[in-house]
Length: 180
Image 1: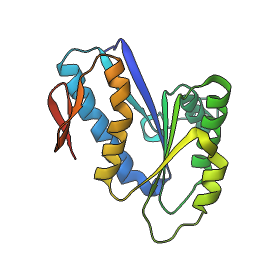
Image 2 (image 1 turned 135 degrees about the horizontal axis):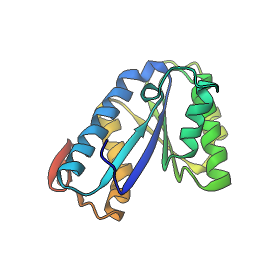
Image 3 (image 1 turned 45 degrees about the horizontal axis):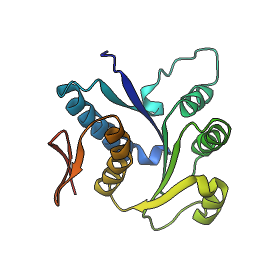
Image 4 (image 1 turned 180 degrees about the vertical axis):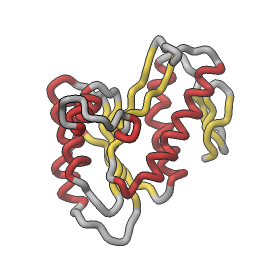
C-alpha cells in the first residue's frame, strides 16, 4: 500500500439495503484516488465502511471496531432509504458523541434517499441528530456522488489539490471525475 502524507477519512454508514450505493461511492473514491496517485499529490481519500474491515473475530464486538473507525474519521456520512437499522443508528450516536467530545469527525452529513415508504420517522431522526448534522436528500446514485464530491472539494483544495467545476463536470487536477 502506498503511504500518503495526508488522508481524508470518510466513514460511510447505512443499512444493507443501500449496499449498491455504498459500492458506487467506493468506486467514486477509488477514481478520486487514482487521479491523486497519478498526479503524485501524496494525498489519499480513505473510505471507511463495514464491508472493508476484516470480518473475523478479534476479541471485541465487530460493531465496536466500526465505532472506533467512526471516532477516527474526518467526515461522517450516513445514508437512509426505508430502514434505520440499529447498527447504523449506533454509528450515528458514536459520531455525535465523538464530535461533541473531540470535534472528530469534524463534519457530519445525513442523506435520505427518496422513497415511498419508510419504517422510521425522518423528523425523529433529524431531532435526534440535531443541528450538528447537515441534512439533504438524493434521488439517485449520480446525485449522491455529486454531493459526496462536493463534501471533498474544500478539503482537497485546502491540501493544494485543484478541484474545479465546469458547466458539465467536476474536475480534479484537470481530469473530469463526475458529470454534473
